[in-house]
Image (cartoon, rainbow, N blue to C red; front, side, top):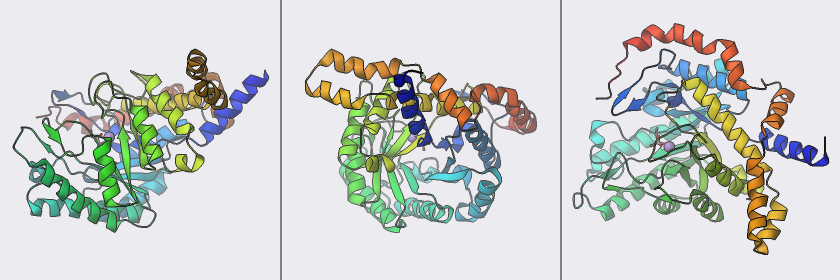
Length: 397
Ligand code: LRH
Ligand code: MN
């Protein structure tokens, strides 16, 4: 093995030993679009099944020890469901990760939740946020991750200014309820389900709202929540510079918030984001939450989740191979082509053999997807869950 190969292996192994990415419970459930759902017999419908699938992904990849929970989908009885979730954590050996409130599906949120003109509705939304904070406290979860779908569909129908003030009030009260080691992550999204204005539409709005809320509020970057052509890694660089980057929802897209599997359309995008992260100080890197946020409408859900974790590991490993010392010199001297080649050559490098060796050295299967196929896990859950899933509705409306 050449000295370069030994150096590369060390860099990749060190990077992978520190890399974890959270999987979303809803990524294992039957999801669809407004045009329908293609039910899968093996899909998870109960929180038990979601923990079982998350544990399978972690067992085969060694990189996803936590599962993100959506409160109304996973803890419909709120705090009362905490003991049951704690029992599942013990049974399956994966911890509850970020707590995601649901402020978008209930009828009373038609004109918004925390930005709704009606103070009673805002109070209901705040209650749900405070429940979510309490659930996080009892489960020992660090992050309460907020996506606010609020907005409007027609110009002139809502006061954008008033809504900012209402959001600040509710987010301030939510921040005040956080435990010392808890954080709230503010996610932005330019549109959908609102199609004229969205109250938290971009990183600037999320940044100002999190700053106004307090020091435990940070910005969450969902890679699918940007207009075409947006330079996402530049937003990441800014948020790092401002100490405001809380974490990511990774997925991929060709058009809008398509929630496709990570790296399936533009893997170079994820590589460029990881490069910004790995170029940051160790303390800055420490607080950044990596999470997957996808809905697997066509692919097998457990396969797609394993494929996404493996792809994230490979792209993180590639980013770890960038010779950042040489790159900094070339950038400083504006030696453009050499700098680009220094940067890009890491992306072109096939890290899969090194990653396979790392897996085996860590007692993990060299090829997680192959191991899943050989385990018969998907066949087993399809048989166990098939009849129940067959009864669930496929139409969206
Ligand atoms: C909104 C979003 C948000 C989740 C939801 C499942 O598009 O990205 O993070 O709550 O997807
Ligand atoms: Mn998201």
